[in-house]
Image (cartoon, rainbow, N blue to C red; front, top):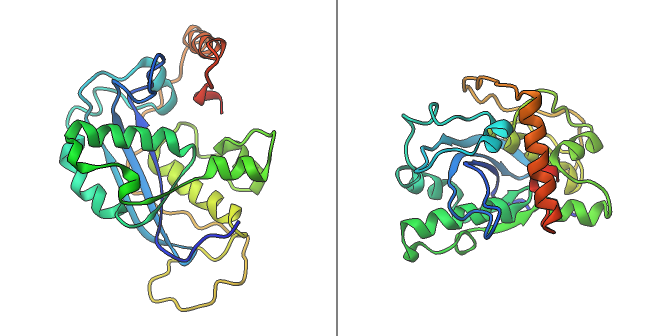
Length: 243
């Protein structure tokens, strides 16, 4: 698999939770978006990151995953308030996400809540799913982001909780490895050097954001969470939390 040299946006979202009885996005909201830009197989240093105040409470199970609380989001903008800035950042790019139908489903749902005239994500961007890419490369194996980091030798030891910007940064490293081997990730501004060589070093982006307070789940909470996932799988659905 080869990556293009055009503008690529690697992104991730965090949400209030997931619907268990219908479309996974229905009745829920995006609460964090993180995205990083790649041009000519280099991180440019341009990124988009925002926390979003939802119109509903966050499910306890979701808080266990990303650590974002209702109280933290009280003073944050709504999705409607950040929509134009976000669209300006992604418009015309190739959007890359891991398990893209999950994130795109939520994005299109936010679009519909604002008005049917906005359209869908694929009207503005080409969408690439790295989970589907990984399944073709490694059929029959686990292909979640942590597993892919281990497989490609990418350090993700600082990933104690899911976070949209951090996960987008890590996925950018994974994507470049999946699409022809790691190339230089030095910032590309003003660079005309060839991209044919490979390097093993990974250059991380500094986000400049405050760390979220880590609230560890109790043994009872962990057991309740696992019981909920067991129930999802018994119904014949795929448990996204276990992918």
